[in-house]
Length: 185
Image 1 (cartoon, rainbow, N blue to C red):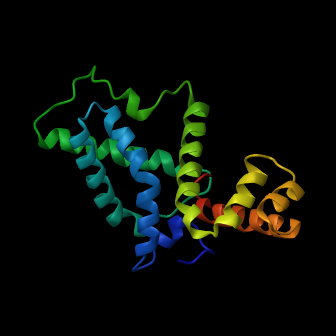
Image 2: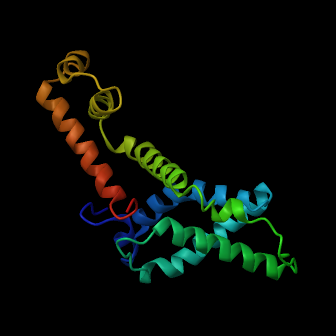
């Protein structure tokens, strides 16, 4: 997998299997949560996730990310539109008072929704990325960034040099930035 382009850019390339795998790992839980917020059963929510992912396979290769626009908002709109199409296909009509506010989000709390989105995406990316690094590299970065421990203390506990701690932190954070580039804008 190339590391010089953002995930969205990699999805536009033919044969981007690794990028699609990463995208599915990052976004399936979020799409499923949105699907459940429509009131869908777990089974129907899973079907909606598959429907959305199928639609994305067709749409994302032509998708052009525009700085300043929300990819999450676009993805949420795709999810809501696929849900509505499913409702129409099953002859269930939305009444004017149908509650889809849980899916489209509260207008009054965009900062909270943005923070939730960022936490989810960073958490999923870190969870997925952890296997891509040697345990000592991961532990050094985690201890430095999350636990805010001094580099000398980390180096001593892991049996590595202080420089190795700084390098580990740089490698992991660079990879995280590359994975999320364009997704958190």
